[in-house]
Image (cartoon, rainbow, N blue to C red; front, side, top):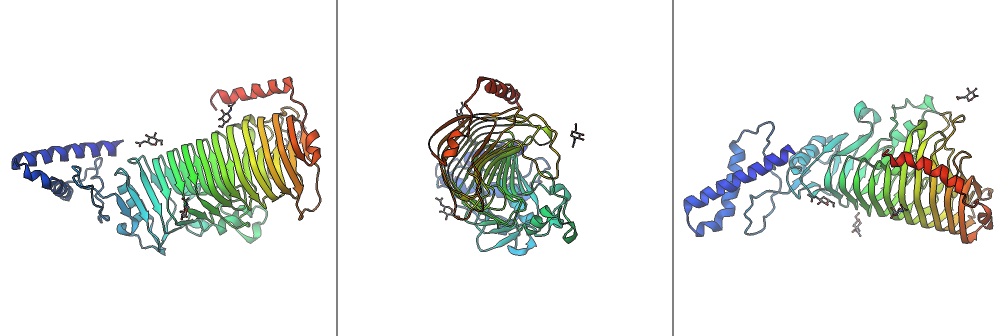
Length: 484
Ligand SMILES: *[C@@H]1O[C@H](CO)[C@@H](O)[C@H](O)[C@H]1NC(C)=O
Ligand SMILES: *[C@@H]1O[C@H](CO)[C@@H](O)[C@H](O)[C@H]1NC(C)=O
Ligand SMILES: *[C@@H]1O[C@H](CO)[C@@H](O)[C@H](O)[C@H]1NC(C)=O
Ligand SMILES: *[C@@H]1O[C@H](CO)[C@@H](O)[C@H](O)[C@H]1NC(C)=O
């Protein structure tokens, strides 16, 4: 806010000053050179002016970034809007720490409307964990055409910064684009995250509860991420939390299959999100939708290897979780452990409702459709927990392809069964690579089926919807309506 105010005051000053000059010359011809005089004034002002702590000179960083020609006849002061990190002292040799240069380029660009921070192609920029903070002037672009490298050693991440590598905080009307690559160099994290069972071979880093992400958006609005490649991230490639209005498209996310706990995209406490025409493959979930998400639209995504697309785990440690209005469609899953998955911890509170999975093509997927209300990681005891997050209005339609273990596994709790689950046009056949197949399972699941259904066992899987079950559901949904 303060920066914006400073900028407006400066504009006003320049405007008045130029009026004064124009008045003195008092000639109509002089108007032609007015743009020039604006420029001179602008430069002089910053050359001499003391940059007060609370009113820094906008958009005149040292060194001066590449100037761009203003539109002819412009009466605005000439301001560059291209902030190339090389002009801010970045080396781009993949070894020198370029964090400061990126931060300075960001801070300068942040003050200019429609500015671009440029990470040029042909260079590799080594960046330590940093926060790029807003709010900035609208329509800021981070153009990544080169490669951005994270520190390969877990130990070089600061204790305070384990949640993410590059943190975009409180940004609005912001776009990341370009043909470049964001490389998290995360292989040491992958070993660490597994070493609870293998302590001798490696001293594990203290992995926080939230998976460290390569790129994280926090508290941000109207964000677009497009075209870039994100690879080898610590434990998550791209995360949005507490954000509204997100567009992700034409993005490639990839880590090898032996990045066992590494997710593609994480969404948490965010709404109005669209992720499409992207390619995601890593060791864990392609997309993971966590608590507090609503109005999420995923489509035209290729997912695999990995664990598929997941809602949850929700309700860990008896927490409240609310997820609603999710559409997942036109997805190709290849060689994933699961396809469309909803997983909740025993003892959780809240609800998952209005979720639709449609047009999903699976190939060699272990269990394509799964609801698991008994989700529990081995190191936590959840056996005695009662209660569950209510799951209702879940539609599966046009799920076609091959599975290698079980076509459908709907394991819902006895206390709070799953209701209004629809299975429409499910055609799943065993993949040639299966090692023993199981029948479709629907435990405490109520809803309707509609042909074609292959295998036929799906037809008798669900129980008919029940008034009492619905009543149990709505009492749990109420908690979410109260604003959790
Ligand atoms: C920011 O983006 C939102 C949504 O696209 C739009 O409604 C709003 O007007 C934009 N703000 C500015 C200052 O451009
Ligand atoms: C997708 O991104 C690549 C760069 O990674 C670019 O070359 C291509 O034009 C983009 N496609 C679309 C449809 O935007
Ligand atoms: C279900 O979610 C979709 C997608 O967000 C939304 O358009 C629709 O209105 C929701 N339906 C109900 C009954 O809330
Ligand atoms: C589970 O409940 C049993 C019987 O009430 C009790 O003996 C046991 O300690 C409980 N286990 C845990 C992990 O809470």
